[in-house]
Length: 251
Picture 1 (cartoon, rainbow, N blue to C red):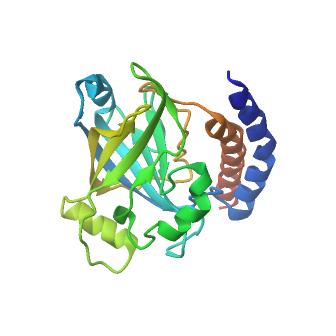
Picture 2: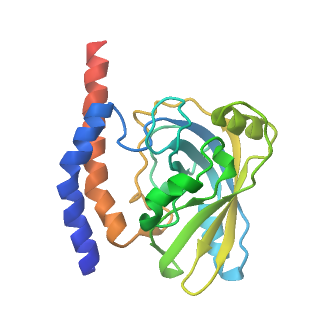
């Protein structure tokens, strides 16, 4: 483990009591508390031959969750938006991950240092009017380390009054698509696959827990920011599970 990752690992566990406390107060995720979940299909579209094996590895059914970073409910106030993507081996929707699943977490933030500035550039009234970045680097089996990811939206034209309705309108019209791209050191972003949003699915979102360290397809998070997440996520998810169990017992 690199020194920066060791620092991040310790820092994340030091943050876990705070993230757990905030999760308890919010009775849900500290960030991205409410979202809409859709079934998706990932289709290989490698722009370069050397990306072909990776594209095939990621191909197949998926779950996509769109959310606001901070506000709960249907508020469309200034914010960063998030997109969580789970690559799956079965098309049967489930909140529970299966062996071999891979999670990638994206946001309308190009890097950790632009988190606040991104609030000013994010189009909060339309999920598909934005591109989404995985923010920090990854090691990818067969391609090396230091790779970055982004999702580029098809930006479909819709007229619905809310961002959730706009998203669902684009899904119904089969125009809701995103290009999954990877960037290697010294190169531009290149297409790997197309993510087609198929239909909304009803899942128990208190049980749907995306994990940046779920790396069943060989895409492994590296670096300081990712290792900070490990302990911080654990604190939040532990409290969320306890809150959910308490709420269920009280019914």
